[in-house]
Length: 65
Image 1 (cartoon, rainbow, N blue to C red):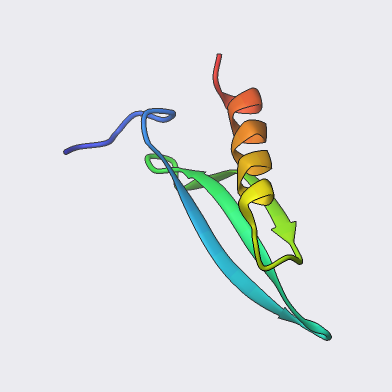
Image 2 (image 1 turned 135 degrees about the vertical axis):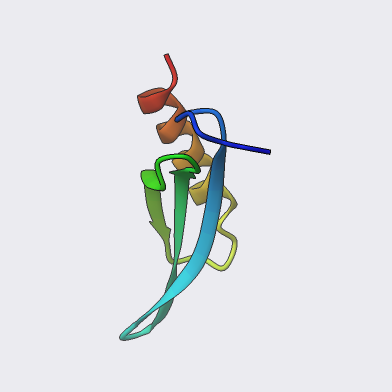
């Protein structure tokens, strides 16, 4: 599948970042064609569901017409 237009395919990336007292989740929503971060959020909780949902909502609000 060739993806050459922006806003056709998005993907999510979840990773954790070490901080002084443990780690935090970094959740990003990115555009596949542009390889650009559309939205991101940090969470200090083990369950990052709310953070992922907030990130997706923010990405949709900013980048979908």
